[in-house]
Image (cartoon, rainbow, N blue to C red; front, side):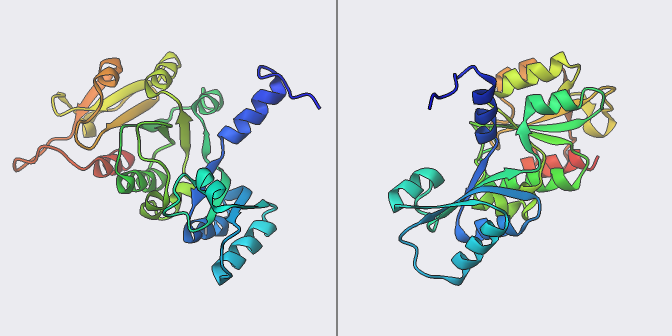
Length: 257
């Protein structure tokens, strides 16, 4: 049987589907994901070496109820799937989440709307990422622009810090943050960075159009390229000699402003 050409609609559609999957690992993490009604599981991966355990049986039963393909692997093969042999506990799952999509899909479906997004530029701490996701879900944020490289990856620590909201969070994937922000700007979206040198305060900033607030690295802040690209800069006034806030706290302030 001939494989579809790499530029054919069938190939591109298939590639897009597999790119939209999120792989999570660890017994408790996978179980919690399967218990969430927002998740669709495509494949459940199990190590052949797993010893009998009640949680494994429960995971398998839930995966079957959701119509997942269940595959048993040698331990080394499973480690390649999870990318974390030390913590996967012989279990991984490929999930397709309700809010997990490519940013260009979001643009196509929201051209007539005014939206507010967060963009993450080098957020490295998994707990910060999880808390940002949780605040965005709870607050007035329509999506989180999450580059595939340069930030913490979705792992059990992120999932725990997010209190499970990662399974229904509006996560917008992109390969390159700078290029994605340029595409949003072409649609009339304002790109705003937080800067201690800005003269406009966050609480007084009221963009007329859709807006993306860029959150930078925990120690270095927003990268130079992204800061140069931005349309606006705003600040959060500090008292008592405090220089800055934790990035997750900043995200919460934006989400509930």
